Length: 472
Picture 1: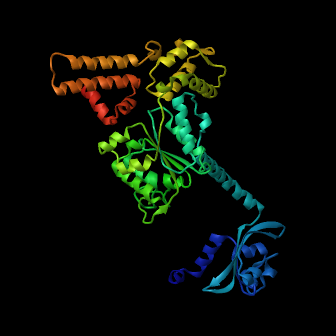
Picture 2 (picture 1 turned 90 degrees about the vertical axis):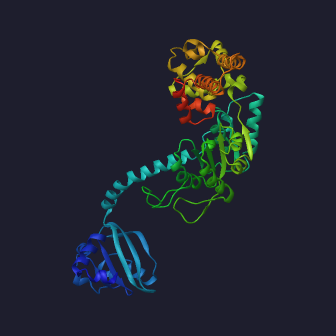
Picture 3 (picture 1 turned 120 degrees about the vertical axis):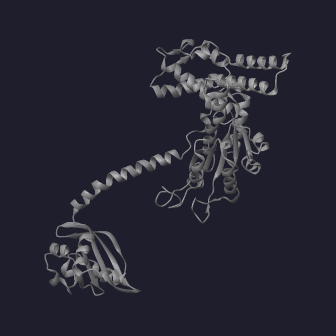
């Protein structure tokens, strides 16, 4: 480093100091000036040759440089009144080796106007930072409590009571239920009722994150871990959830490779960032959720048995809407109030005729489907009362999907009782066709939902639809 400085001409070094700090003064232990740059000399009205060796208090009004040179105590961002103005100054003790030899002073802002101009530049950045901080904190809080979980049937009350009872512990929870039954709502409520409520609630949809990104999303990464990695690295979801709760939705869609990494985290209570070399201890409660049959997946070697037992400490089965159809009026009323706020409407009611139609539907999409139906009704509603005219045609013209189930079972029965024996391949193909058609009806033509109902991958579902020339 010394050789590098020696290669710079003295006038260069002097100009660099002027540019880098604007005003600077250096004193020895006795408080006498050893150096003052040109711009500072101009401000105090003295020449550089004149100030050298003078006591700093005779050069700079209200100076405290001599005090810092004696005490070795830094004074940072101090208000310094001078020449009927106020500057913001820093004063640092100057050590060479372990010996205090003097002090260095710099001026951050030469007057109030400088500070005002600087504040104007910084203020928008601070506001933006506070905005994202508030947004971040809001997103890491639970949004729902048990009071917002609607239902009064015995089967649902038993589920809700169990969830409330286990909220106080830190044991892992596995939420099982069909798509749209409210698994995430239960996860929010469990966190809200737990001792961890004041700490983060972090949500992760394991099915929506590409496999090659899931590890870094869950566990974070170090700087330079891969091309495009952020400077300073990034915290993963587990680190963000420390002392709180992490909700792993669609855990059944996680690959075996990631399952093994997750198992280690649950066992060791520590994570290791991608590209990192040292483990990071964490204290996180895990709530996992799935609509898939994990027990069957364990048998088929599609889900790790040891991970299943780690997650399945407390299993909560959330019943589908068709199993608690008497709750439908209560749920519908709650959803109407929510939609009224969204659409700035009020006083909307559901006719008894509509309620009977809704109660006769099979609800393969559960509460999510019910909310979509009611939102559609409000969009086309002119008055205050929802009548059958506002309902989607598939509900109004065919109020129960049980008919589809009966037809499917009838077709399978006819297939089994045919006198002409078909090949096993033909029988399997016909059964698959009917199953796919039924799933599409149940999911209202949504192929992704239909694939979930059949518990097969999206790609497999699309391939079979193409092979059997099935269109939604």
